Image (cartoon, rainbow over all chains, first blue to last red; front, side, top):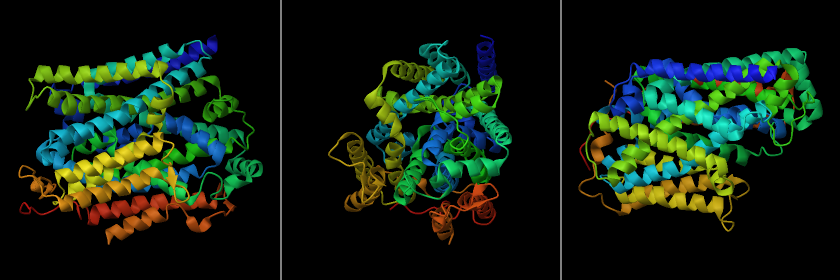
Length: 492
Length: 66
């Protein structure tokens, strides 16, 4: 009972801290949509770096990643390092900086808005937002599910699933609704820092208990000789490359990441974020996934369906520290989910609700504030309700979301850089690969991988590129398309 | 030029030439040390890029509508 009190105390204290930060941020928040969704485009380096970082990390970093390293070997570090540290860094420049420039010039808040205006097509705007929400909603639901299960696991069922998942949802709603992007970015900064400190403390603790890194790795290599050697088992070059590429391109179009490209305060902020990015990636992934890999040699037993990281910590560290790390995992979930709620609301209210109601131009400030907050609440409650009962299909959509988003990236890059892109090219390049990818996920007739392990999402991306360019070449742009609107952009 | 550098950085983030090498150095597999070094190098290259070439390919001159 005493252990339970400490655990709930640690998590409760953490949740209260998150809400308190949100409230402080609220005092600096204006009522317009730009401020609510993008913090008035004023984010500084530390905040942008950590909010993007914390947003990228989900429950997966703490649970799924170490589990994978535990079962298949530490090569997962390479996949994530290539994906996040190098490829995403490059995309941050190619897509992120370009979008930031366009956003500065035209004041866009969402991707759909940007493309809809450029191609003078409300249909395109609704399509992009609709596809994004289709993949985003189940992904948010998975986070809530993860949070609920983590709390059930920590308290041995003393706190039921719906209370855990519902409680986390409620706390997020509180600070997201109150303070919007500024609150989210500030809490993310704390959450990101917390995750780094916790994972390094955990590594130092476990390594000390195991008599040093050398002994831990030796033990791993003895129990699983294939872990020390690069490759083997799950890790084929085709699988590693397809996974890294498809996640990196997918991340770029995830609404909560994509919107951050609009939110940077200045060129300088983007530059610093870009240069520091690979280091931050290393600092988190190497220790987190090595812990999972070392666990094989330490003789840690993981309960069926359980996670390796809590099992290692339970073995080597005191109860309060294990509770802290679970709080860190909740932080990881919340820092992705809060941003997803906010961006989901932006897509829902600006790109679907407004066109559906035929609302043009700005709403009154109060109306805007209300609509965007109601959007957040609708999204959060909807995904919470879904998390209570969902199985099969919706879980699979969430698990394959990265590939779904990756289908958007190449057409968007083409549109950002190439004048000759036409509306018809965009519809073809965005619509058809989505159908292909969905078919590969859900229809047994369409394989999920081709040519010896290259994933279907990669072929969908190629198809999108070919279709966007090909259809654009054989069609002429409508007179109302604004081909030059992404041009002539400089930072100063 | 920078396109090729980017491609190179992505190509060798995973040390393909150490495939199946089980060597361990100072407590970690050699391929992991390579990866750590490579990402630090990447960060350094990104920093140089920011100072010397930022804007290349992305910032454009105004053009006539096609």
